[in-house]
Every structure is written in structure tokens, then in C-alpha cells.
Image 1 (cartoon, helix red, strand yellow):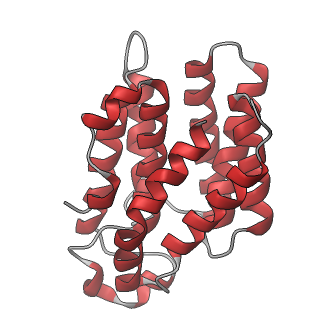
Image 2 (tube, one colour; image 1 turned 135 degrees about the horizontal axis):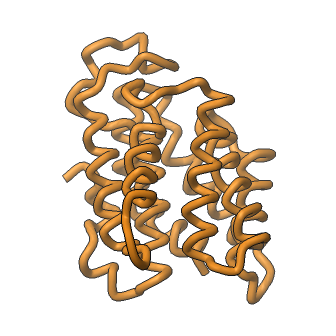
Length: 207
């Protein structure tokens, strides 16, 4: 179950996500992601397919998860659920859905690459997926996503609460970007459980 794997990652990363978010925000991102995924997992029907997992998760994050990031993650999940429901090739659907979710997030949140948000993880990671040839390598994609999320440590925030604390955020990555990197980690492990041993432990996101 993908969302259970995502929850496992969020549980392991909770303390790190909280610490990171306290630098620039309310420090509640770890709680919101973990508790949101707990709610999703508790509501998934037994034997749910991937489209159903994303659909249930989207509804829960859009309707029930607080903070700025909750509804934005919900948009990402909703677009991915829609693609999974209409395409037979799951990998192609995931790539198209994540790209559609990025577009939705940017329409609603108006964030651009370089603003130090989850977009700075999503956009270059999706570009890498779109540029690749052959079968999707989710382990390589998860590795790239974490690198993209970590790179936000070099960015000054131009949106949200973090924009008010100036250079204090430098050296610490954006929590929302890290939360998206965890989704790619979960996708890699879902596709290949052995990938867990080749990927960075979610408890040590920031190195």
C-alpha cells in the first residue's frame, strides 16, 4: 500500500520535518503530513488500487489537513488520482498526474521555481522524469527529488511565512519540499521494496 509506505516515511521523518519547519514557519508541517497520512491510511478500503489510494488521500488532504501545504498536497494527489483512473500504464499515469498536480499547485499558490517551496522539489524532479527515456527509474527519481529538496537550503523564501525571516532560513531546506521528496521515496519503495536499502533513510533527510 503506497500511502502506508508514505506514512512510514513521514513517521520516520517527523522530528526532522518539525525541526526544519520551526526555522521558517509554525513547526507544524511534520504533524500535518503525518497526521494527514494517518487519516488517509485509516480510511483506505482493503485491497485498494493505486487510483483509489490517491483519490482517498486527495479528498482527505483537501478537506481535513491544515496549514498551507495540506491543500496543495491534496491538489497534487487529486491530479494524480485522475490520471491513474483513466490510464492503463501506471508509471505513465503517475508522471502525467504529478505534472498536472504541479501545474495546479502553481495556479493556486502562484509559486515559481526559486521561491523556496515544494515547487522547487516537484518541478525539477518532474522535468527529469519527462526527459528520461525507457522505463521509469523510481529509485533514481527519489534520489533526485531529495537532492532537489535539499537544494532549497540555498534559497531565500519569497512567499509565505518564511519570507519574513530573511536569511535565517539559509542553510535549512524547505519542509514542504522535503515532504514531497518523501512521496517520491514512497513511490520508489512501493515499486521496488529493495530500494529502501539504497535510498536515504527518511529519518535523516537533511544529512
